[in-house]
Length: 107
Image 1 (cartoon, rainbow, N blue to C red):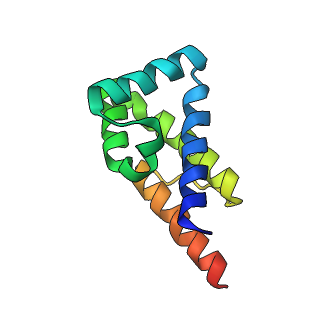
Image 2 (cartoon, one colour; image 1 turned 60 degrees about the vertical axis):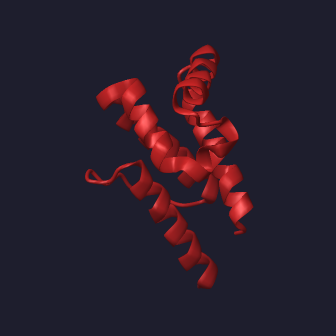
Image 3 (spheres, rainbow, N blue to C red; image 1 turned 135 degrees about the vertical axis):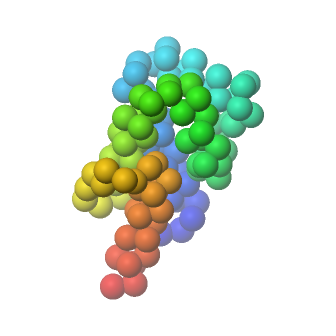
């Protein structure tokens, strides 16, 4: 899968995850990400570490639930089975999805 497609799918998963909070909260979060953390919506896939840190600052310990929801949406969109791993964070899930896609492609 080309990198641009993965970025697009990841961005869709982020939007859908944030939408689970409702449209107004999603828009408020995206605005806050851009104004307070200098992360534009279209740049989220290229700034995943900063995005995850920003979610942590916005939601505190509750950020992990939103991150897992986004990860689940990503896995669904990629046709991968999602398995929750207690010790993984958002970046670990995204990296695992990328690795599994490569293995799937090479098989």
